[in-house]
Image 1 (cartoon, rainbow, N blue to C red):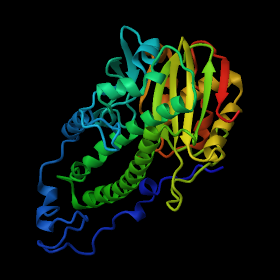
Image 2 (cartoon, rainbow, N blue to C red; image 1 turned 90 degrees about the horizontal axis):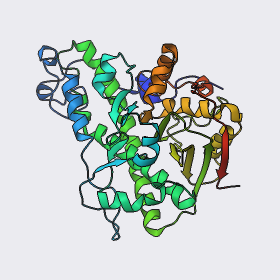
Image 3 (cartoon, rainbow, N blue to C red; image 1 turned 90 degrees about the vertical axis):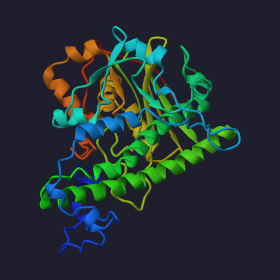
Length: 392
């Protein structure tokens, strides 16, 4: 078991950009690698006005609310309709079950919130109409496609599991596209900075860009493959697990993630090994008929490290499962919605610890194997009501 650096693009800056031995000529390509002439890029940038990260964040937030429907039409193309704010967790089930006065708290915060809070922002209050939404699908496709997992009850099978997986993948892809689209803006964040700071910022941005583009390429390919499976209704390689509790967890979430450790803190995959593609899992916490479920789904071989991750969770004592999975939501998902009174009622030290977990795996903090054993204290104990796996 190790707790060393995991992401080479974040934690190994020697893979990034070295300061130039000498400045390029005014008509030569800029040292930062932009491909633009030096005189139109970094020349005299230290004397220019400092960048405004809050204004740039507002632009990115606006862009994140716009998009085209991601559903493939029957002809194999893509629906051309404008996307609505698609919920990643059903509003009338999972969200309303934890909402108070029509609102929840969310860990999906803006760049300015992160900056102002020095990397550890409090969850923000948000209405259930807007919580957990992204510009994923037009109204027609959103309603028709996800009807099997949007009702008051759930009968989980391969098709339903695929829909949980597909929605979480589209969420992650849509948000990744927005970030990549704003890379040129991010690269100008060194405006007004001294030369040495410019080198450091561009070094980090070069590495960040490489990681983003690699991830986006992989996600686009997976989306195309999933579109084919959706149109042909081929669920043969879909594997899933549902753990249902005997009451309500105080949160919901949906995300896609790459499990690096199992629930005992053992290594599963090294994301710094770029010769091996990362193996993702879909993770959802929502509720049906007043009972919360944790649902994990993947496509591909049944018996790989993802099953190992799931079976290690099943090996956690039933008395701890609810608290462990609740803490895990803060570890891997920026799309977690929280019951306000539960959050306010937690000791400040617990809130600080859970907030700190949201930074794991980012440029702020590396992931920690020991974090897999964290427990979020619940208002009342929850027992396991049932367990369903596709391989049982």
